[in-house]
Image (spheres, rainbow, N blue to C red):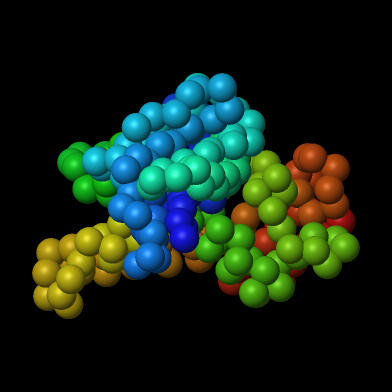
Amino acid sequence: MIFPVLKIEKTVQVDDRTRLDARKTYITPDEAAITLIEIEPESGAGFFDVTSAKYLDYQYSTEGDKAISLRVTTDGSPELSTKTLPVQTEADDKLFSSDSEIIPYEPNILDWTKEGRNSFLDVHRASQERILKYLDENRFWDKDGNALTKEDVIIIEEFKDWSKFMTLRLIFEGLSNATDDIFHEKALRYRQMELEARDRAKYRVDLNNDATVDANEALDFRSIEIHRV
């Protein structure tokens, strides 16, 4: 039997490099050897022969749900597997920070992007998810008791420092392999800056779901209570 295994990101931005990874594809012992591995990054793009590398690095020029197909051939009919990758515009992704905001702190930071990527947008996205999870866990909800989403954050600037320092911390934690290495030291330093940024006085968000921020719609981290209309 042939088992096509395609690893992709949860979501990506338009024009952001991503890796479509088929390296975990395998066959059972009774199957003939794999002779061809092909990936089609989106419908109509055509299949690329990736038999040697077993992955395809790609970036999408348009938004939308992209159907990615992996085709694996041995000595008979090929086995096909398809996954969907959501591709968003920068505006729809609505991240709280970007690489341009962390480069001033670490001019060579892009030298450390992982294989198959040329940005840290995936880490900025992880920071956003963690920030929203923190708000939920600390009962910062909208007027109906629902968890806040990125759409509720109208004034992104107020979350920017928290996000960028968290992103730097996550990057260096991922690079660190010892408690006394320079990456660990950097991670600790950015962790402190992250906490200081997080514990600013107030964050203004849309709590009544009218797509605006009213004067008394604020999250006060010092008192751990929500001020609502």
